[in-house]
Amino acid sequence: MLRAVGNPLTGLSDREQVVAARFAEGMTYREIGEALFIAPTTVRTHLSAIYRKLGVRSKVALAALLADYGGQGTGPARADGFPTDESGPPVIAVIPFDNLSGDEYWTRLADGLSADIMVDLARYRDLAVIARQTMISYKGRR
Image: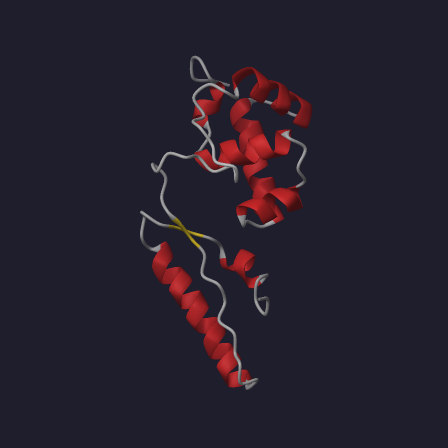
């Protein structure tokens, strides 16, 4: 496997760096997903890519690598784990609409509107839209 000279973490995307750091801290897939507003299966997909890119095979190896290189070139982070630089795209979450009437017709319309808005926003390269499956978990919540 070829690696960049210097810090191997520079080959990870900003999101992969955040996921790797959270995982090395001991957070579970579910905890990372809740913190980053992504599904646990998405966390698993990110970790698979991280392991492949860094050439590690275990959580211990990942934590050791982060301890060696964690402070170099990853950029400062906010308390929520996202980078403080504004270089990444803005992240948009479309909260599902609630049907207050109780009529099934309006529920389908509300679901369709949410999905259409997400699809339309996802067409812009300068925006990151949180996945529909992740946002459905907020349906009916306050």
